[in-house]
Image (cartoon, rainbow, N blue to C red):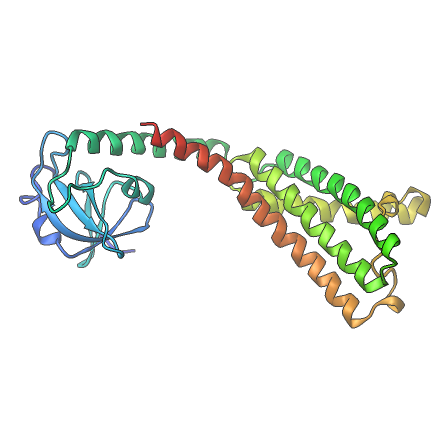
Length: 280
């Protein structure tokens, strides 16, 4: 890991800030913010000074240098994340002076508080949530049944061939597990992809358990056969190359759909967090 040299405090020039000009600036979340093109002296809002960061596309934003640290010979890490910098008040046209350092300080302080609060929430309530995954799987099962009935009726009405029916089955499962992953990610709030994946794992485990139970107690108790879906190949004798490909697509497709659904469910909470930050 590259060693960093923290700023001792005080004016940016005396802390070595002027020599930082031209360095690549990264946020405390590790994201690349741009290149430091100018260092301004400290003031009441930021005693450590202000840095003018120019992004790849030419945009210029002010970042506080309080708590900044040199990262090797060409890098600089500041105590702000990408979201904070991207939404910071812009500079007045044709000048490097901040439009209002008080507004900038309020912006960064508020964003920092929210980021710290979210980190604490994630530490306490993040991770895998079996309850969220279970309810996500229930939604996937319910949607599979609902869409399966509709798909079966349409397939029977148009006289679809077995291959078409299998493709429809795969599509139904993918849509259902995307919705299940979304519910899991939405309920868990954090780590949406992980909880979407966990909802898929719950589905796989439940399917295996129900299949084993049906094998021991009788086919009449196999609840999986009650779902009105066009059938997948039921035995090795029925398996074709196309069938094997479709089964693989079903397994991988539902897995990917559940993960993406989980991320989509989590993104709802990120939008809520951004709305709170924008209100500051």
